[in-house]
Image 1 (tube, rainbow, N blue to C red):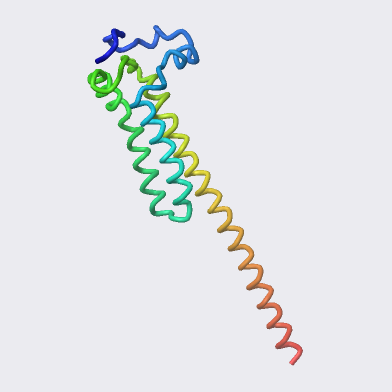
Image 2 (cartoon, rainbow, N blue to C red; image 1 turned 60 degrees about the horizontal axis):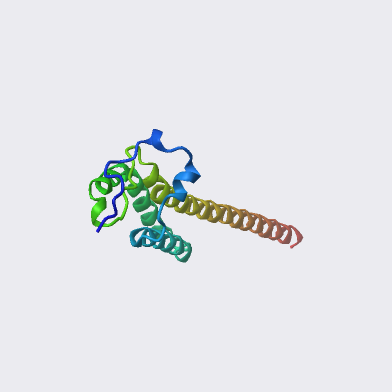
Length: 148
């Protein structure tokens, strides 16, 4: 049964400070622990699939789509918070949802971009090395032809 907390969404002007707001959250609620586990699982899934661009692209698009629909998810959660939460955390502007859901998802997307840019840099470096080696071999063949 839900505790007697605020039944209406919290307005953004009712929040005095971000860290004060975060400190008021009961981080031991099962759904918040599950959400944290989701973010950790996504992080490890990104690390495990770092060699598979296709899987990472699917993860990236899925995560970005979930952020795109975050406003709708926040509204859905605000309307049904009694079924999974002890308190009504879901404010009308989505500060709570952005803090606990969208920000970690966007950090995971940023990690994906970092991995892709790192892989791209390594591929460009390998390409330059192959090009230099091919040029060196072509020059050696040219020298051999001149000598013979």
